[in-house]
Amino acid sequence: MKNRSIVNLGPMLNAYPDSMGGELKETVALLKNEWKGAFRSIYILPSLYCTDLDRGFSVISYDINGDIARPEDLKDLQDLGIDLKLDFILNHLSVQSPQFRDLTARGEESEFRDFFIDWNAFWEGCGEMTEEGYIQPDEKYIRDMFFRKPGLPILMVRFPDGKRVPYWNTFYQEITKNPDGTERYLGQMDLNIRSELVWDHYRETLAKLAGYGAAIVRLDAFAYAPKAPGRRNFLNDPETWDLLEKVQDLADEHGLTLLPEIHASYEEGIYRTLSEKGYWVYDFFLPGLLIDALDSGDSSRLAAWAEEMLRDGIHTVNMLGCHDGIPLLDLKGLLTEERIQELIGILKGRGGYVKDLHGAKNMYYQINMTYYSALGATKDAMLLARAIQLFMPGKPQVWYLDLLAGENDYAAVERAGAGGHKEINRSNLSSAQVKEAMEKEVVQEQLELLRLRNSHPAFSADAEITVKGDGPLLTIRWQKGEDRIRLDADLKEKTFTIDQN
View 1 (tube, rainbow, N blue to C red):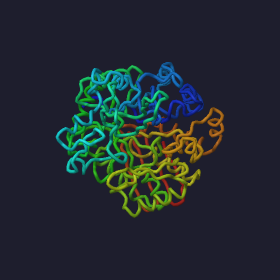
View 2: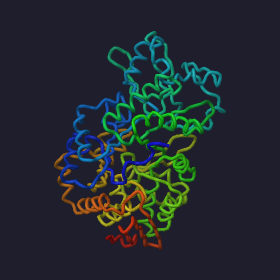
View 3: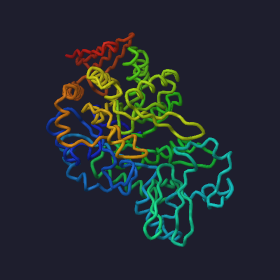
View 4: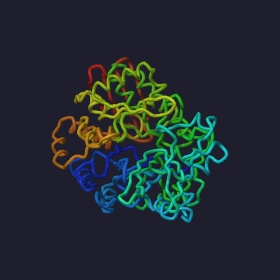
């Protein structure tokens, strides 16, 4: 397949456009000056666009949010030789999007009547109509369905004639009253991929992202988009892969590399399916495996994962922390249930918040905290974790707050109110706070490691990589021709050396 290779293996910075200094131009200035030579790519989260909640993942339109970014900032990144990764949320749009506003304003007359998923039309013949005006599907049709929140994923939408029509709403929703008694919605409404207008939207969006200079497009929530009665409606097979192929064809027109984002347990093997289809995958296993290895002083499970990637040609974008917390669900099958519970206890003891998924029973999903706090806020552990990440197979992605040794931000959680647990790891830093953090040794030494990763010729896509784990000792070596570089790490002592030529 075309355009499935990542542009380069150099480190990728990951941040919101306003994470440092309040505007994207401040991050560009860091990359141009203090962080020069440390990064080859940047992943800018979707508050770059016009959005209204979920810190960018509820998109109103894919136009640039002029309050925090400008097209010139993206051009400056290109001029620095830093390629761009941007988000495309396939499954939903904000209720404030032009399409949904047209629906609520015109009702049955709207051209976007079927742009979103009419719940009753979808479930016709599969259940009983309730007094509230929505179909309650028979148990046989929903018993295996994957839910992201309690109750049926419905938003009752009032049409201009007063009729209420239920629409599919997998994620967030909020309904408030305006002073005149009309309703005001917040939420993310699922798109009907059977609608040609939705595919027009997909085409227009990919063209727009390419116009911004994107090289990589991260597909968020794409596995929720294909739906059918009686199915799980998350990762429906083969419909999910059919959708991905169709979007890939659109991306090919603009030379875009797609990076599908899926959280699923290791034992389900979804990462392997993606890899076999030719896609790069997110290494959501590394964050937890590293914490396990550093806590236990045992390199075996971490080394086994690296060896699997190398043996089976699994290409990854890896990370420590990110905007979404430290994955837990993904570890099922890599670590025992007992060990996962032990890690949860350790991380909660260091101030983390466990997030569960709702369904027939609660299931741990992720833990929200900074990675620096997850490592006990110790310099040696942070540097060792970063060094191992940079030597692991794949392209390393670096969360700005990890780089700046940020600790759990409880004040941000309190300001965010109910459901604001993720803000613990999303601190918006002033320019002065960034400057202060830059004075820490742990920050400067991470930058040195990143510059090494970005510049040493052995870190190449066609390098030979070898990994050896022996108790607390871990050795990873990259070699391309006569260029060699080797990491020798001691997980128990939290020390490492790098040998290079």
